Image 1 (cartoon, protein in one colour):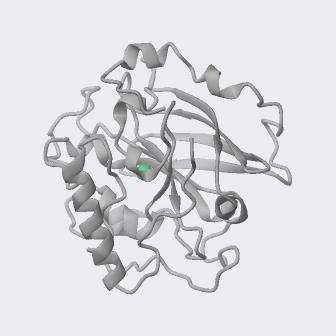
Image 2 (cartoon, rainbow, N blue to C red):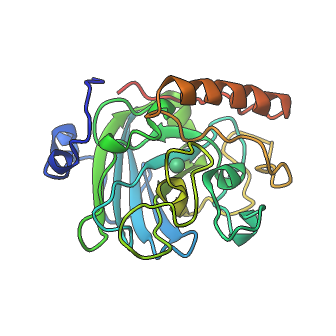
Length: 271
Ligand SMILES: [Cu+2]
């Protein structure tokens, strides 16, 4: 499953995840039904990114379909299901999430609102939070900035029970419009070797009907801790290897000390 893949991005592009889709005849693709949940993706960071997504459950198999546009052409876009299966009411951030006032909502700032990675929406292999930055297994936008993604992933019952509490986030922005990730807006706070452009969120969407301020499924705790601006920064981990993972552990401990019970990723899938 976790074969060593370096930047086989071209190959990945030509491999539209068809392999994972042998049994995908379950939910209707257009209308949200009892076991299908629509998500409208709205831009963050003025990225122009937008799209729609559908989450369809067949038992504990989750099919994720995403059609988005306005993304950075030709670039991989890390994408995840963020949020909690513990009853916390995470939501997509708005402009006020930019607590350091640098004009970019970075992932650390946004994680306060949309929560940690629950599932990494990779094209193949591992889908745990550990693959959050596995950009060689993330889908690429085409030359027009459009991205199509479809994959069926085995998930935990927790994810099934709390599917409405999860959100899709796609990362990767291009403020200077040069169609690549560069250091125009500095380094990523997650890994100084990565440009901020590569990890900042481009769009976010919650399950339709899971309104802002709604009581999360099966839970009573609310609030993403919008006034706890400097916690919970490990949502994107993975590619960088041990250093990042170690940092993640430390940050997870930090979160725990901040008294939220959400430090541990739950509902990891076992793909
Ligand atoms: Cu994410």
